[in-house]
Every structure is written in structure tokens, then in C-alpha cells.
Length: 610
Image 1: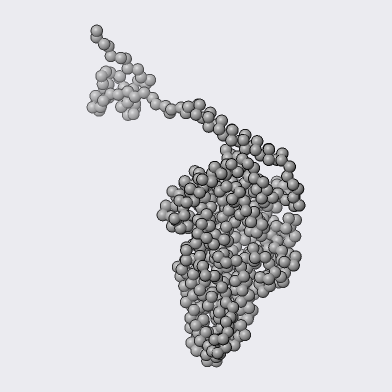
Image 2: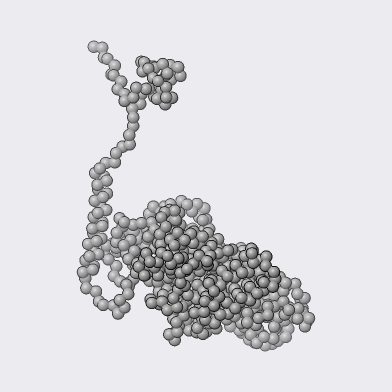
């Protein structure tokens, strides 16, 4: 029996060729006229549609998420029903009991975190040739260490770093942290980034103590960077701003200030978008939230001014665009306060804001494009005004927190902040005399003096010194001793005080040559030699040209001063063993642990008194 050809069923009248060329198809068989004209095969392809996702697979995923949420909620309610002993302090404690659900979830994620950590142990923090590949992997996993493992670090952060620079509000952050572990189905990128940046801030002063700590620190930073672009292009929020400022703080304590400078620009724009700099929006928020918004803005203000000074660039935000009050002298929660052993209080946060204001004034009055075109007399007057502001600021600090006494009256965990504050002051004072580590012309001029120990040579050298030379040398000496009293292997502090530290080396080295009869010359000589060793380590870590020039000049002057001292009292020097600045036998710089960051990426009197 003859089989008939099956009828061709099609949803459209035109064949494939006529359909794509948009010509009329006469549907002749076996080939239409268009296909004959183009000598093409006449085919008909039916419409395609995407394969629908099986409803049962989707429902199973939804059910599993709901079960996880219900189990976590049930465990949390059971934990709340259990009687807990009354704490003497009603403050929301970070180290309180961890819900069983959060602990179980943390244990499940611990293996993934450990696996990813092991994969990075063989890589140095800045050695990745393709950082984007590792970042994308971390973005998809969004894992964190177990909650019990990170609680001590976060507790330490809120007791020290966040106490002096209140970037986060403690109770709201702890609730956010616990919700992250308790409700895995509701995790968000901004919360994950905020937790990672707090962990990085908690370890930024101690990560150089071990290789494993350095790797963990780098991983926290990579985690934040993996979602940073996505966060900053979304709707502005306080949490994103706090995360961004936290990353600026981390990069601020590194060898290269470039990444921090770029990030602070974005942070300032976020501050302006959120209207943190004006009182007009304060009424829209509760008092506690308005206070935190104000504190976050002043942290951005501090970082903006400090980075501008270090890079000799104009600050991003202008003082004329600020109408909120500076931090209160007596905050109700004592946030921003450092307490001495005797009970004396010092408002570190407020004092740092005041110093940042002077930093901005120094640039605008002395180093801006407009200031550089002023007559010499006006420039000198502006410098005198800045020195007066700095003197008033220093006099407002309680005596126990002055550099010569702070090491004996302040706890070690807060001493680094006092050290940074006084080194910044020293750097500003030196800058007003053009004798700081950024103005090497002064040092080069000293090197060009007559290389001899004759009275004429000493007179020529003394004529090139600033008029308040003795005061500058005394402050440099006390700052160096204050730095020596801070905890070892604090690489972030080393980079933060590097400008002032280099200036202090220059001052003491030159003073040893200009004043060989100084009663402190032997101790100063030993301290300078120890400081030059540290400077060699910094050069090894960064290969920075400016550091090399300062090291070469100071080494030359120090050798001349040493020969002068030896020629005058060789016997005394040979029997005296002065206490130099010790840095320990282990050198974190040799392991590359201090080169952490992967670089891909008012009125005068009002601000100078407390």
C-alpha cells in the first residue's frame, strides 16, 4: 500500500529563509520560490521555548529553606526560655551563649572555610596573578568562620578599636551578627561584608604576628572587595558606608595609601548622599541613630584630612559644608574616651577630630594652589597661625596623656592610639617649618654643609635649624620612646606613624651632629641606629625611593655625628651601653607579612580646646 507523506504542520507560513530575510514565501513544495532563488534548502523550524523548571524541584528547595528557618527559630526560642544568671552589667554582651542552631550551622560551614583557607596558605597576600578568580569564588560561597571562633576577636574590636573610633554601634552589630548565623536563608551581601571588615579591623594590629593570621587577614579583605562594587552602586545605606570606611581604615595602615585615598572619596560621596554632614536630617531619626550617624561622619572626616595630609592633596569635604556639632566632650556612653590608670579621662575621638580640622587648615592656608601664590609675609603669618592652633590643641590634652607620661599611665591596648596622635602632631609642627619627611630639601641642605667639626661648620649647621629646634627634638625623642613602648609586630601602627617617625629620626640624627655635647647624645645615638634598622626593613618591604633617600641622608649624618662623639669621648662611649629601641629578633617584614594590601584595586580656638 502506498504510504502518503505526512503533512507538514507549521505555526508560521514562511520557511526559515524567507522568515529571516523578511520576504514573502509562496510555500511551494518541495522548495519555495525564495529558496530556489537563493539556492537554499527549504526548511521549517518550529518555535522553541525554554524548558520549564520542574515544580517539584523548586518546591523541595523552598521546603528545605523553610525547615532551616523554623529549626533555627525554634532553637532560638528554646534558648530564650532557659533561665540565665543576671549579669552585673546590663549591656548587651557579645560573649553570651551562642544558640545551638547557629553553632550547628557554623560547624557545617567550618569545613568549607578551612578548605578555602588551606588553598590560600601557599599564596602571599599580594602574590595572586588573577585576584578576580579567587574573589568570585568567595563571593558565591559567602562563608565565615564558626561563630564561637570569631566572637573573641569581635569582642576585642569593640572594647578597643571601636571604643576610640566608634564606627559601629555595638548592640545593633551583634544582633546583625547573630541573625547571620541563625537565619542562613536570609543572608545578605552587605551584612557579610560588614562582618568581614570588622574581623579585618580586629586583626589589623596583630596580623603580622603569624603567617596564618596574615592569610586570614588577607581573606577578610578579599571577601569585602568581592562584593564592594555591587554594594556601592546600590541604594546608599549606613551599613555600606560603615563597611567602606572600615576598609579605608584597614588600607590606611599599609605601605601604599593609594587604595585608601580612592576609597575615602567614595565614602565622602556616600556621606553626602546620606546627608550626614547637616543637621537638617537629624530630626528624621531617633536620638541614638542620629548620634551614630554623626560619629560615622566624623570618622570619615578624620580619614579624609589625614590621607590628604599624607598625600599632599586637597581634602574632599569642605568645612563650609558642615553644620553638625563635633563629638561631645562628655558623651553619655563614654564612647571615644580613653581612661588612664589613675581614672583620668581623655576624649580621644573629639581630640582627633580637632586635629583633623587643623590638618585641613594647614593644607588650605599653606599648601593649596591659592596659598602657594601668596606673598612670603602672608605665608609666614599663616604658618604662625597653624602653629598657634597646634599649641592650643596640645595644651588641651591632659598631662597624663602627654607623650612623656603616656607610656606609664595608659593601658597597652590604647597606647598605639596615643602614639599615633602625638606623631601626627609632630609631623604637622615639622611641616610648618618645612622640615618634615615630605620636604627633603631641608635635609639635603644640611648635607651640603661643610663636612667638619670646626666651629664654623657647626655655626653654618645651626643657622639652618628651625627657631624652636630644642622643642622639636624633645618631642621627637619622647615620641620615639612612646613608639618603643607599643606592642611589637604592629605593622599597621608602623605605617600609620611612618611620616612622623621618619621626621623624628631626621631631627635626632641632625641634633647629634649639631649638638655633640648634648647630655642625651649617647641614648639618642643608640636609638637612631635601632631606628635605621627598622627603616631598612621598611625599605625592604616597599622599595620606596623616598625612604631610601631619607635612610641614606640620615645614615650619612649619623656616621658623621658618631665620629664626632667618638673623637670627643671614646672611653665613655665604650663603657656605656645605652638602652636603644628594641624590635625583637623576629622580623615580620622578612616574611612579607607587612606588605598586606593587594593594590588592585570653624574657628581656631573652638577646635583647639576641649
